Image 1: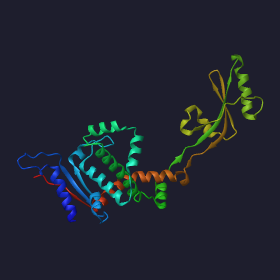
Image 2 (image 1 turned 90 degrees about the vertical axis):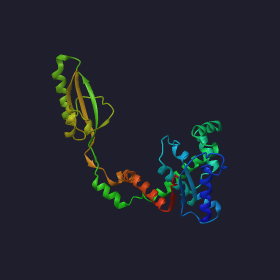
Image 3 (image 1 turned 30 degrees about the vertical axis):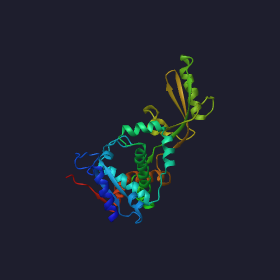
Image 4 (image 1 turned 45 degrees about the vertical axis):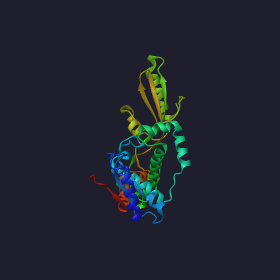
Length: 297
């Protein structure tokens, strides 16, 4: 613990510029906003101390995040603690991983230099360190949060029973338009088609390909389909002739089965639980960590 305190004080000392000669006025290079140490870190050598001791500066907070939005000090702290946790979990994001990721992002070395300069990084190395911390934090969060997102069978069943989903009725039909070629033979054609509807004989329609429509998709004047049985025919007078309908098959309104919905239900429960799970992971990490907010003199 003594080594930790010395390292903290030394970092604070030089960041504020107090370590300069007394005849020169104090120049603030940056300001320490928080000092973090994860108490559950491996209690070993100096490198472990450095890996698990993090100093958050004002510059880190005011920089726009890699997601394009501004972040509060507390959000930066949470990310830093997660990145620190990644080390405890033996999660790694090596320089080779970083180079591959930057290549995937299409960032050349000159572009990295420009990006680092635009976001007030000291150099590309610091830019990469910040990006590495983000990836480590994301990987640690994914690992830590998973245990909070496990959905039990009884939870799935309870959700299913309390949130029923009904599948509306569906009708598979074929249609055929029969044009009236001679207006004075309307009754004759109608009788011929009506006989075909009743007996299935006396006319050879050219049916269109079968289509399936849902109950909600039926127009008001096509509601007769709901009363038909598979194989049944229907004749409907329309402008310029008649429409023949044949019901190929129908499926009545039914309750969607648990087997069909299980994966969706699990995803819905996990999604609803996600914000609370993140907050819980962050709270656990903070409980296992020491966070100091320096007070300005």
